[in-house]
Length: 196
Image 1 (cartoon, rainbow, N blue to C red):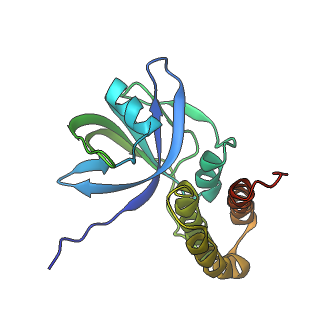
Image 2: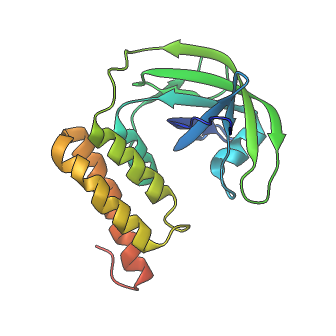
Image 3: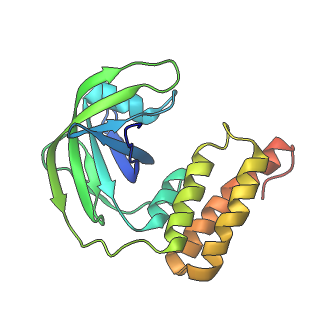
């Protein structure tokens, strides 16, 4: 029986050597008490972690942060991390501050094995509604616009929209709209149409 691999959708914050913050959604996994981050190349997150040896993982239920990071919108305030050189989201449920222990290179998707050196719980997690899960799924698709066929994206988007129509609140609708716009702009660019 294969080993179970849980992937947790989080927001990873890193900084470059000049101290400029980078905020992006990332699916992470846990292995032997280490956080494993596996970015596709090329990756700003990969470059930043290799340069600084640190990252911060943020757990949030505000799906606008996922959508905003992917669509170059404001994702909320950042505050200094407590024990690493970097930042965390000010309004997050919990965060983990990480130090790079091991790097396994790969031409497509290297693995960064990170030790948790500090973690804190800031707010209770009340659970996801179906619309929040749908936004996160669409965010994953948007992060792979250049890797996936448009037909797959539009098919999955149509299915996910059912949950949006049934359970979305204001935050989920706003996040969905940003991601939908990114997909429409990508489609227009592929077809050499003017982007609104």
